[in-house]
Length: 471
Image 1 (cartoon, helix red, strand yellow):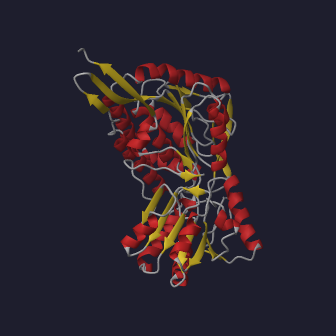
Image 2 (cartoon, rainbow, N blue to C red):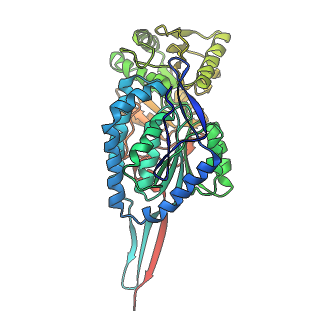
């Protein structure tokens, strides 16, 4: 068992008196251990970040950008080795793991090109007025287990470019790649600028309650996000919350089914459907419903589900036992209510957290499998006949993260998209996000912005400067 992983605090590799087990979701077995950060070590990390902030905020932005760019390049350089570790802790097939790590490095390089604007309101004989943006301080970043590298660096890159320092905590289910990245990046950033700590379920609340943080950036469930918000309110910490989604896709009757079936399938099931913006409710016009359902079932039965380290595996296991049991509970509820479940390929029966790709055939709108975010490979397909009605059904959710519209008539698709109450809408594509484009949720999907110049400014505060000129 590998227990050589270390936290990064003030540029140093740090062990802990306590450790926590890390489980391979393809086997259900412990394969490594990670440090379980103590309260004293949390205090040390925050103090180191606070001390480093004094000089980091005055470091010219060009130098900060250059270091973030260099970190992205270093991540790409080590992507091959990290991808194998990623698969063991997260479950995704190695090739897809490699794509996340390499793509994250390129993403960081793109963020490193961003510069906050300066707005000049007046430059007259009498006075000069400008608004500039300044860093906040020490950032508390808490990343999830479904995209552990990508979503951690979504927070780190803009925060550091903006002039903040950071203490990052990955999910206790997927801590290892992030710990390794912390050590890699200690070669680039000054001590204390980027700290990585790991711990169990009690560490997150200790971080969000810590008075040393100026802002919390959290990605995770809506229920946990609400608790984070309650804690942050006590000392008015700034917040970015990227939370759950129950994303609807609307498929119009004019689509080319052979062209879109594969795209719709992987828009729902990539990463074993453990994506906040995956299609989780599929509304299909009644005239093409049967044909699309049959195509999706055929793809499901041809898609290999298994250990991500095995050749040919397309979809891996559910990442952790807690989520595995939640998805099983939804499936059991669907069976108990006599819903029609259509399964894809067989799954391994060797102790891993495997669930077959499952399509629920036209369940009632009120069923749990429609109303709740599954975050696993169970997709309700629902018929519609009227466009106004399906828009209302798509919007009848407490979530508002993303959605999709599929149609050859792009003008009609755009008209529908503009009525969808989500932060992101795709037309004839899905799961496309860009570092230069804002990503935000509505309703219970959170608030604040990640990505784009708007995401960079989430880590800064406006400061207006008025200067009278000599008369």
